[in-house]
Image 1 (cartoon, rainbow over the protein chains, first blue to last red):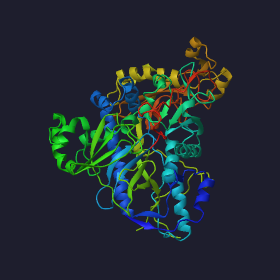
Image 2: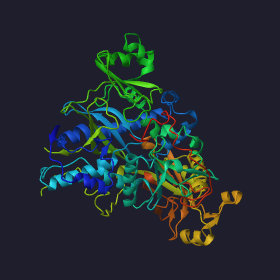
Image 3: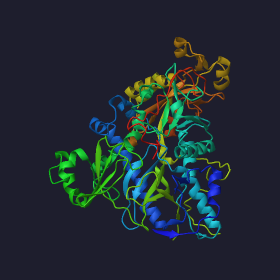
Image 4: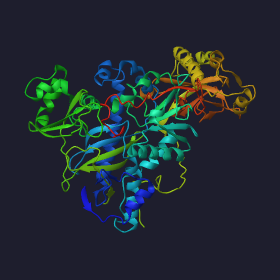
Amino acid sequence: MEKRTLPERPGWRDEAEKLGFTFADMGGEPYWDETSAYRFTLREIEEDIEAPATELHALCREAVDRAVQDEFWLTRLDIPRQHWDLIAASWARSEPELYGRMDLAYDGKGPAKLLEYNADTPTSLYESASFQWLWFEQQQAAGVLDPDADQFNSIHEAIVARWTQICADGEDVHFAADPDNPEDYATVETLAWAAREAGLGAHFTPLAQIGVTDEGQFADDQSRVIGTLFKLYPWEDMLRDEFATHLQSSGTRFIEPPWKAILSNKGLLPLLWQMFPGHPNLLPAFFLADVQEALSGGTPAPEVADAFGAARDLLSQGYVTKPIFSREGAGVVLHENGSELARTPDDSYSHHPMIVQGLARLPDFGGFHPVLGAWIVGESCCGLGLREDRPLITHNLSRFKPHFIEG
Amino acid sequence: MTERLTRKRSRHVALVLAGTATLALAACEDDRMDAQSFPDLESCIAASKQETLWFTEEDCRKNFAAAEQEFLETAPRYESKELCEQQHGAGNCGNDPVAQSSGGGFSFMPLLVGYMMGSMMSRGGGIFSQPMVKTADGRFSTPKGDQSFASNRGAGKVPSSTFQRAPSTIGKPPMTAAQVSQRGGFGASATARSGSRSSFGG
């Protein structure tokens, strides 16, 4: 793994605009940044990222299987009791998942560490699957990249294949998101194009325009009944909104399925650590309530005492606290050697239960810290997107960096 | 140009190249599960007496009831009997018992002509069932309609996707116009403080 300075494609900004990639610059700062790119070897991609991420997803499925049957975990994950059945039933019926993005800390030396799994509403899909791909093809054609080089990015083809697998030929799928957010909309549009390519009918409806019919079904902005709904809107919010009472009775099929509420919850991290302690791609993780006193020399909750004891040395070097529900780095605080190292200014999620996770310091490449986004489609890892930032906590103004495989 | 044997990137993507890729996806062998179909509950119970099989009389009863319920919830519904018979063959359609009581506009549906049970036991998933209806060409299919079978009596291996639920049609089928009584019940984003976030994703 290295960061290589490369010439930018002449006129890429015009092309981005022409393609509708309107958020290539955000808030006066570049978002898409191709002044340099990350290079990986094929071995690093296959052995350090692809295989571990696919395995982690399988472990996550085991964690779901555990949590849906266990009131203790459903309570800890703050899943409203009236929706436990909805979630358990969606898992029992094997309702298929579509996609997710694992955020990994990786420096090319040790094993990649799972920071968190955005398994419900990951964005940056267009830049990962399409614009990054275009960058690679054009740079290779221009001779900037080696003819033997490659990119870990079969995301688009994997999504098309997944749609054909999980929907009937010609099935109508509604896509709901906030149309005023270009990032969210681009992600949904990317998925909808893939759905059309898979032979499905794709229809967009603004999330806030979804209605309930007289018969209790959901309907789109044109009052057409929704059979299958892809929603770029978190389950933790779906379950608490006014329409939550209609979720089960509507008969709607949801993508992602309701059981993803367990994976997109950062309470997943302590659950994984309890089930697979010491796994090379996991960081020690606990609920803060169980270990708060222990972090400053006191005693942990009895049920995690052994696990905490085993992780105490690692945690004393550094740890992160974050709310179980949060997006784009909100509410994350970094502690190292007993003092606070960094925090994000946005604390809008910090009223939720918190977790503690061992600190995996992100590597430094020229003053920037990359986080790897490993894309999971279906049950397999199929691509990579990197974001980097100057602060240690990646947030929504971080830069997207292209990557390539060489060697 | 030389190329790696294992290509790690897509051959095309959306929004950039307007190509139409046809991706035929064959079900993996390990994705296939034992399945058996029956015209009615009695034939399932009779078959369950054979000790070698993976289901019991209790499974028959439970799954037949589930298939009957799922049939009511997901079988296709039509405005007229003619339209229904075009899709499912002459004599294979009847009145919608649900619409009869609620007075909906789509009051014809194919007859329930059997059910299929599948075992996901090997993967800890239990036994699943789907109702079966006739197709226009005289075959049998689940309500989702993406797979059809020559018979409603037989055993074999089918992809586990056969047992995924079809979209609900109880009330009205997808894409039909409906009377909307309320909007705006999604999007309040209860877990974040209001006005503090721009994106629902991350």
